[in-house]
Image 1 (cartoon, helix red, strand yellow):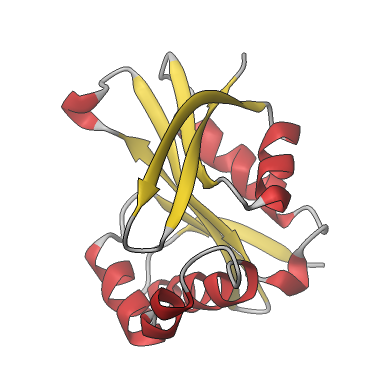
Image 2 (cartoon, one colour; image 1 turned 180 degrees about the vertical axis):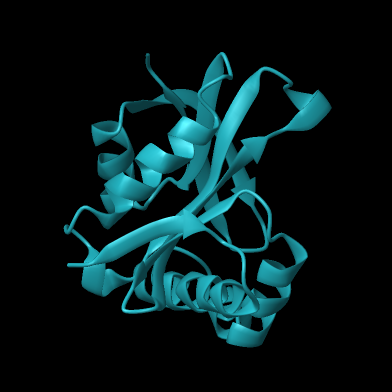
Length: 160
């Protein structure tokens, strides 16, 4: 597998990120989030989001196609000493092939200077929770429910 990880830079890569975002939600979240929300989550909406927030994104590419991405950063004044993995998605065809772990490692490297690192994950997404636990994250007891997707998220903190 000739997978390349790189900073997202081109319009083609931004569109690739949008596709992975859209496809991943439709692959992984059926039965976890509101079907109504999934039905309204179009590729066009994902492209709009991707072009709105192109910074702090690393893409994984194979044969020129984006197959996964990680977004990272900070919460600004809300929590100035906390870095966050905002999103990590990989196409289902690449599950279990190490792509997610490589993306996580690169994302964590970008925010290693923060005293704490967190992420939010859907409470019912057992596969993702197991993956994050393997990467060193543990649930810290915080939860929030999003009415938009009719689902609860849990916060996980990196144990160092």
